[in-house]
Length: 320
Image (cartoon, rainbow, N blue to C red):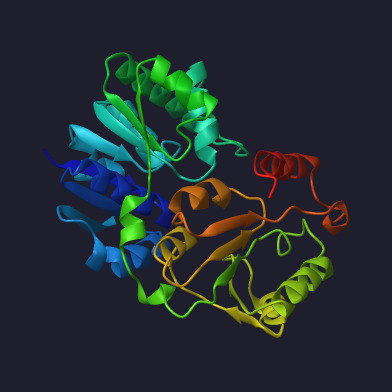
């Protein structure tokens, strides 16, 4: 029986493909039409998709797609209003929840506690809150009946151990598919890759200490810099002007590019962020990951205490 997935981001697309690869199940991946990045990612990766995986482009609405009527679904983002509406109207049925970055940790905790799904940091109106409550009930009822699977890189974290205790099937996403493909975008990178961050463009970090750190890093050997999507304009120009730094715009999620780059890349450096857990899972065993801690003097006065606490928690968990 064919699985039907609804995805709204490149990372959701990647994780839906990984589940299809791990399970061997025929899978149709429905793309949300108004998200150009997921359409572009699917087009670039379509030649590499596992046998039995197909892409259904230009979905106007999850409710108007085969995803809504499917007996088995893959949820790219259970917080999505589109997905919540399907769960509310068409029922939970059998479903697989895949990662959408570190927000998956909040999702897992809300489901474990029986709280309404509520995307962290969003001021949701009454309709979305109501749909969130219904979605939680549908998923938890499915868990109690053995009809929910969680496919995640966070399988050993406490929320997912609790979900397993409550009846969900929790399986690890080993990112086996992405490690096995070869991409042109992964060729020609330097052995050291620095993953960009939005912390400076977003006003959380001071720019000069960050640039000074990059200059020191490049002085010891050339690096490939993969910028965050919000790193652009004069800020990105200042990075590209550093001797020894080659800025690469791969047009694909970094998880895909770096997962396929084990032949040329030996060391990846990133700031503490949501990519740490997925990169740990995606990178080949011989590729080392360095999580660069943020010195106190790098922080801008405008950086929120909540953000700093989150970053510090990631640093404490991965103190490289």
